[in-house]
Image (cartoon, rainbow, N blue to C red; front, top):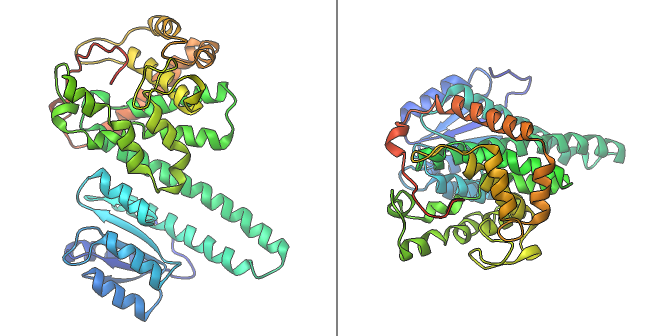
Length: 381
C-alpha cells in the first residue's frame, strides 16, 4: 500500500511499451505526480524542462538504453534517483545497473505491490538526502540530528541492496536447480562462524555479501561445463577454476562490495596452499574467505544431491576435523566445533524453509534444471 504524502513527489516513467507506461501511471498517479516518456531521449528533454525526484526506466528501448540514460540523468539532475526495469532476467543487467548508479532494479513481469514498495523506499531515501543537504547549512545541532536520520536511511538502503542481491542470486541458481538455497545457507553458516570468531560489524557485512555472491563468477562459465552431468576433463576444469577471478572482475567497481571481493576471489584457496586460483597459504588467505570455506564445505556435505543424500552432522564434523590444517584454517574449524550441533541444524532448517517458500513463487520447472554432479572432489567445485 502506497501512502500519499502532503508533497506529491515527481516521477518520470520511461518505457517504449505504451501498456507498461499506462499501467505504472495509473497505479502511481493517485499518490505522486507522474509523467510518461516513450524513449530515453524524450525523458532527457523533460528533465531539461522540470525537476523529477525519481525516474523509472526500462533498460531495453529503441535508441538509448536505460543503462545509458542513468549518467545523463545524473548530469542534468544530480539528486534524481533512478529505478531500472527489465524484461530479461539477466544477472549482468542488474550488476551493471548498480555499477552505473541505479537505486534499485525490478524485473518484468513485476508485482505492482513490489513496485510500490521500491518507489516508496526510493522517495523516502530521496527526501532524507534532501533534508541532509538543507540542514548542513544550519546549526551543528540540527546537522547532527539529520545525520542520524541519514544513517538510518543508509541502513535501509543496505537492506534494499541485500534483498536485491538475494533475488538475483536466486535467479542465478536456476541454472542449477539442485543448488537452490546453497548461497542462503552458506551466508547463515558463515555469519554464525563470524560471530563466534568476533568479527566486527563491517567485517560481518563484507562476509555476508561475499558469501552470498561467492559463485557470481559462474556467470562466465559455459552451461556445457557448469551443467555437465559427468566428470569434467582437464580443459573443463581449467575453465571452471576461472570463476573466482571472474567473480572479482564482475563485482570490481561496486564500492559497497569492495570488502567482499576477497571471499569471491579466494573461496577455493586452501590452508596448505593447494587451492586455486592463486595457491595462497594459511593467513595469506583473507579470514572471511577461510570462514566461508568451512561453511561451504559443511553445506556441501550435509545437503542432498540428486545422486546422493546429504550426510549427517557427525560425518560433516569428522570431515572438517580431518582436513583441518590442510584444507581449512584450524581456528575456524575450532570455532565450528564450539557452536552446538542444534544451532547448525536450526540454521539449516530455517534457511531451507525460507527458500522453499520463495521457490513456490517461481514459475519455472526445477526438474528441467537439475544436473548431476559426479566429481570426485567431495566438497564441491
